Length: 569
Image 1: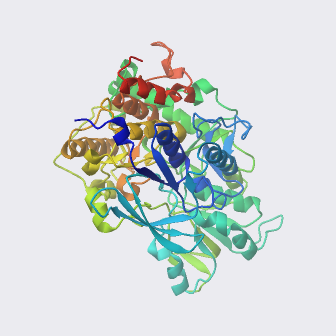
Image 2 (image 1 turned 135 degrees about the vertical axis):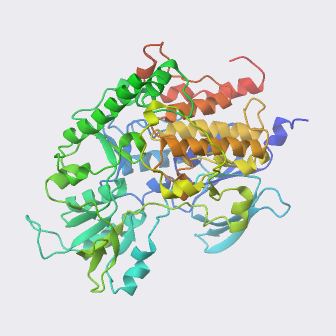
Image 3 (image 1 turned 135 degrees about the horizontal axis):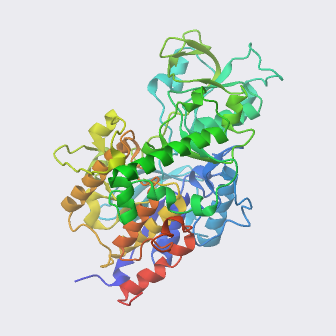
């Protein structure tokens, strides 16, 4: 017998994390009738965009509207509709969303130390620290949604850790980029400003890594008149234009059309990704996109900035929009940021004032900022037994399961990352551990990498709510074994589509990669719920250029309510 709706709503759902994913998940569950409690260790909403983590010059990859949620417009909180959003902009938006829709539902300053099954084998027992009282507490909840993200805990190689620095006698500031917002005042005070010309006597602040965080930090430091050097094996790719792209290009499905998905829904996608002529068109588009971006940013042909990942094959792609005169690429071209690339920092020098590169070169350093990636937030809050029981830990790649996608655009792929050969994530759709799927009391939101994070997490929140409600219209694997087989297929697809990205290294951030093809991924979730897909509209000729708008999904609750009641939409 199917439980009645009232029975399915009993108990409390705990949402851990108050970033974009946590906010929209809590909002959606509340509207569906659940009792919800949001826990965050921070003093305000925002997650990685909370006040103590942002700093001047920190920009998102998104233009106005691509990091928001349908219940709340960004204007008038954010007026600039055609430029990059800053960290301060998103901080304003998330705190306003929390105070408008979730008043009394968020507990701040609650640090979750351990999660395990409840005493009777059901529900969830949380060991937390209340920062306001400094007292540990034990709490019980019926359902759990993890929205902790994968960018709040930095990955630090042991050879570059503060303890390694101390052992080598390097007693200057060493911090990870996640702590840069908290450390920046101390860092600026520890090193002198440079004059009109860079001083040869002042050692650089060394920034390790070539990703967006590293670039933003270098930009901030250079604009604060500090000498800075970036050391990395390669750089993120980027997109840029002399003037803002029209919405029918920038905010449509066009880029998604030119990126293959695990299945090709339309004839145009099949033509582009399974024929020789289609491959030529796709390759030409992505090559032109990269070259036009370099030209717009004024990057010379012989610049080390051109040693970057290929945008078609990677998720390390930053949307610069219209390049800024005081932006990273301009500062490098002007000689205000020194670049050492390709190179890697191996260790700290025994002289106590330098870092040593892998090729043996010594580089004097006044401080070191490590933009060396992020680690999953889950190992610190789940013990090993619970992690294994839930299937949250990385799983060995199943080499006996072979899946092939005969897409012409996926030929001549880069080599597979060594870790991608060994491990994969086992989150079904990037939302539910396949091993745990029949229990309907645990889900994840925000672990799917998507450039339109607001849209993706909002649709995922509705999927999670239907999953918790036991909606019969939600298409789900019937068993854990079936879910695992489907998840293995998804993992095999990701190894084919993004071979250089090992998803299991940080599966709370990249459990599923819906980067260029995020609209197709969202359509899969909508299809699971039996709801209309490709909601932007258009005919056979115009659909790729129709602007994607959050209004398309603002009625998902009402649509799901009708299906639950057996009414036609």
